Image 1 (cartoon, rainbow, N blue to C red):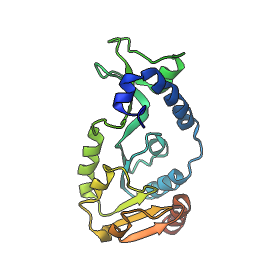
Image 2 (image 1 turned 180 degrees about the vertical axis):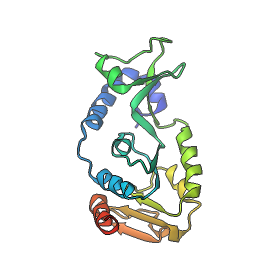
Image 3 (image 1 turned 45 degrees about the horizontal axis):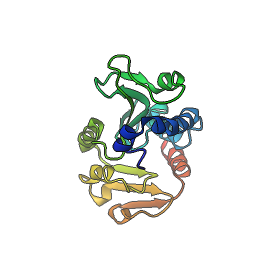
Image 4 (image 1 turned 180 degrees about the horizontal axis):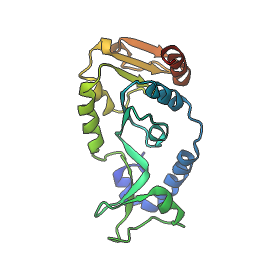
Length: 199
């Protein structure tokens, strides 16, 4: 956690990138769609949704339906920015051209940082945008989250208990705030929902 904090990144960017490369290669190689495939099927069958994801692995965008608005509230691992001027680069390009140490931008000779939220970073604009977009939704469905990170539960506030459902493998401290609670594998639950709702 210390290394993946803003302070840890600034103190030891070389150590950060050594670990970040390992994580990014896992994200880049994921090719099993799992629950994302079933979410996309629901969207392609006319379900309009605002999706707020805490994940930085890019899978919601990879398997997105055109009927989805997707907000990566903790950013993404797939782009990086110059810490001085904000110029963006693809993470693939950065890591493919980084033999060791940490990358610096050509524009400002400043450290390049992945566009994901680190511990003690400020919330991105995407969080405030999804909070506004959620105002027009009829229902909120939480999938595979214990809601332990304090930011996303704030999105639930406009919804009554009967407008909330949660699917998670284990119980969460927030279960009592939901009208529908399902403890199960989200891939299996979404598959069953697809089979029931799509035609």
